[in-house]
Image (cartoon, rainbow over the protein chains, first blue to last red):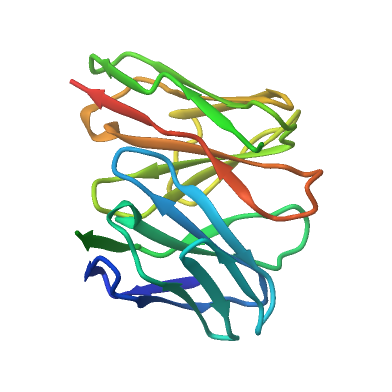
Length: 113
Length: 117
C-alpha cells in the first residue's frame, strides 16, 4: 500500500525565514510525486510534479527536490501570502489506466509578518 | 490553462434528499476525472475514478449506490449523493487529468461544501 508522510504537521515562520517541508513516501514504483498548495475552504492548487530522483523544480520562492525516498519543498524568504497547507501526493506505476493519487496529511505553514 | 470548476460551491440539504455536484474542465478535455472527500483538518481521500463513457471505479469502502458518478462527456463529470445523511456532510473536491498534456498532473476544482441537516 502506498504511504505518504509529511513533516512537520505545522510550521510557523517569520517573514524572510527560509525552511523546508518534508514528504517521505513508500510506493511500489513511482510514476510521479506532486506538490499542491491548499488555502482554507478551497481546492488544492498545483505547484510541481517530479518524476525521478535528482529532479528539481522551482517557482518563485519555492523549490521542490526528489530522492528515492523523500521530497523536500524548500521555501526561501517566505512572505505572509505563502501561508497555506502544502500537500504532497504520490502516484504509483500500475497497469492499465490507474492514476490514483495518495496524499499525505499536509503541512500547515504560517508565515508571520 | 488547466482550469476546473465545480458547482455548486456550497449546498445545504435535508436528510434523505439527493444532491448533485458538477465538475467541469473548462479549457481541456479530461478523459479521467476523480472525486475526493476531505474532512476538517484531514487530507484528501479518493472516492472514485470517473472515466468518460464507462463506469466509475470506486475505492474500497465507498458505496457506489450512494455516490453515483456520471462522466457523460470529456468536460463534465457529476457526483450525486443519494439519500444524504448528516454523516455525508463534507468537502467534496473533483480533479481532472489532461490526457493530452503529456503529464500525469491532476488539476483540482474549488470544492463543494455539503451540509446535510
